[in-house]
Figure 1 (cartoon, helix red, strand yellow):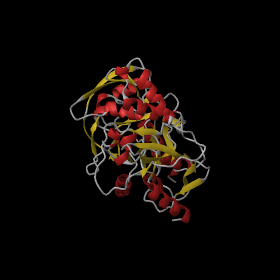
Figure 2 (cartoon, one colour):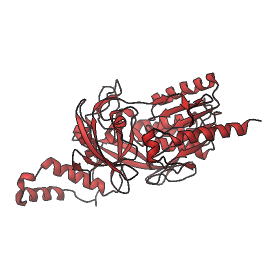
Figure 3 (cartoon, rainbow, N blue to C red):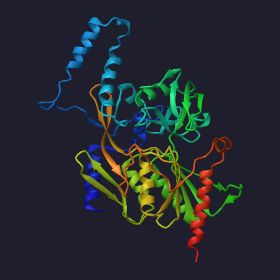
Figure 4 (cartoon, rainbow, N blue to C red):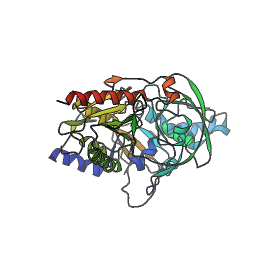
Length: 420
């Protein structure tokens, strides 16, 4: 391990800086529908208290505005002090024009993924705010979750929740309205990427946060695929690292000649876990470049010696691939280890830090940007796949995974080309 990497790991530990969406136990606060946090002994986020420097604006004017509203506003019945307070906070953060910086109210902060079981009550999807349109977008439904079973898709725009328009909502507002207890229902109006609008009613349930999913494959003709393995990564966590190592060992034992890594439902996770996962497949090279607010760069490099360095790879990506998933895909692509097949990824390229507030809430704030090894910016843009393939509505209705079929064909051709 290089000294630069050591310094960076120490910095991450001290400041509790998280990459992209927070790791599983905290990611719910920035988008998992249905969220709790609990358990003792966990290091908490840093406090947001700070002193105001000379010459900076005095936000006391907000108290003056509030006093005038209480004294003069004609519709006093509609004056909700807490709503006004949160509106002022949200408005301040919205002025930064950064969809990933948000206020988490105390109620939302106190609800989340159970620290022991990794479970929560909700619909089982992660949401984000489109950095361009400001719309609330489904990053990815968890596999076999209520959202998945009801027909929610990655890239769906949530237009209404229980009949109320989401226009102007923050992610925190969307989470508060969509999450709920097991057995209760929520009605969503969504716009699919095809442009079709659909009303979907979902019954909330207890959802177990997934990590690694494997299955046997069939090709486009329905024939068993016995030479290629498949693994779907639905988040980047330490649990993912260990589970993926087991999958790679199983691949070697069973004599598979190639591996398809599916990141189409992966909204990211912890930076350290993301680096470890990418490093499993890299002998050397840059994994990512991170740029802080002062323009200082930190480079994460592969250390080599990973269990999957020699396995031929294809990576499936799409609108549900965000943050850490984009880092991994870019690292494998730019270092010549994998071809990307699918559609353009979400475009989440920020490092975020959680800072606790005195009211029991928190600010989830962007503190740095990351670039791909080839120094491409992903924030607001996304990764373009090497082979772009968009499933049709008919493909979706028939359950025909044309992207997976293309990955099987491409990997077989690549493997065949290496046979002497």
